[in-house]
Structure formats: structure tokens, C-alpha cells
Length: 222
Image (cartoon, rainbow, N blue to C red; front, side, top):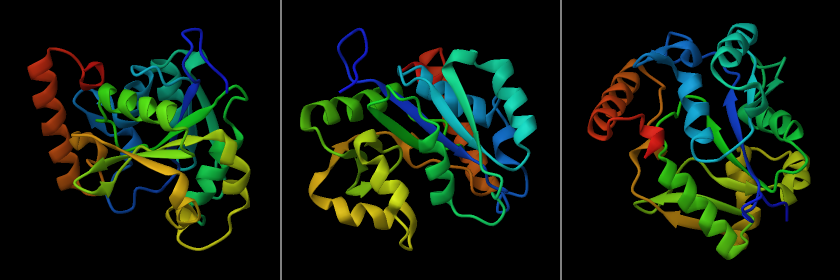
């Protein structure tokens, strides 16, 4: 197992932001969310939890998003992967493109849609600790009995993910691994707050504002 200097497993991030944002009616990654672009907040939430580097899969308006990320994130902390067929392919395609771009020393990676910037640092830590304790192939945050984002996935099973060609995306893939997938119970609304609609965006903005006001810092610094 690849480890950090502190003796913990090396954990990287994979963020998916290649889509058209058709349901929102605006381009989600670059929407302003309480003073920062959504995609920047999502990447920063991972970095603040020691998840680095973060690979971001882009497609629609990739050049614009790349410029925004490079202006906000240290170059050593981020990688860009491109899905040129973003308009006609599904999320699993972007996942496969992203995992091919992960660094070789990565032992496991968190997988997160680009419109979910509110996951707490304590949640990333809880999931990582569960994997280190159980050696599971993947660990999902569990809220009220439901698996949520972001799962932490061992790079040991990357070849199996790349070979998977069934329907239903990665959700169907996990049916093959029921016995080696663990859950980590958490109490974190950030694991289900996303931005598919304008109402979702407003709800997420209010949640972030409330938590930042209470903590006196960004949510990702919890």
C-alpha cells in the first residue's frame, strides 16, 4: 500500500465536471457560490482534508474551467483530464478517463461530482479511517441507510472498473463487490446536497453561508 510520510494511505481525489449542466440552465462549475466558483469550492473541500492531488475531468467549456482552477489551486495539487465526447457519453466514461489520469502512487481515491462542494473534512477523514481499518475495496458514507457521495475507492480495482461494460454505470458495478464494500455512517448534509436545479443551488448556498457564519471559516475547514 502506498503511504504518506505520516504513515497513512495515499488518498487522491477524482472530480467529475464534464457535463452540459442541462437541467440547471446555467453552467454549474463556473456559477458563483458565495464568492467562489462551484468547481473551486469542490476541489478545495478535498484538498483541505488532505486529499491530493485532485484530478478533475472536464468536457464542456474545458478551457474556461481549466483557467479558473489554475488561477485558484496550486499546480501540484490538481490534474486535468479531458472527456472530448462529453456530449454523447455517460458519467462512467468520465470516471474511466479520470482514473487513467490518477497518479501512480495513489492507493485510493475519493469520487465526487463537481457540484457537491459541501462535504465536511470530518467526513473525508471518517471514510478514510474506515478503509484503513477494514481494507475494503470501497467505503461509502452512509446517511439514514443510504449510500451517498463521496465513495473512497481502492486503486487495486481500477482494472475491473475499466473493464466494466454493463448498463447502470458504476452503481451496477458495485453489485459485483457487495462483500467487500463498507459503509461509514456520517451526519453530513454535504454528502447529498448537489446542484441539479436552481432550487438546489439556492439551498446549497444557504447551507454553506449558515455553516461558514457559525464556524467563522469555510465549511471545508471543519
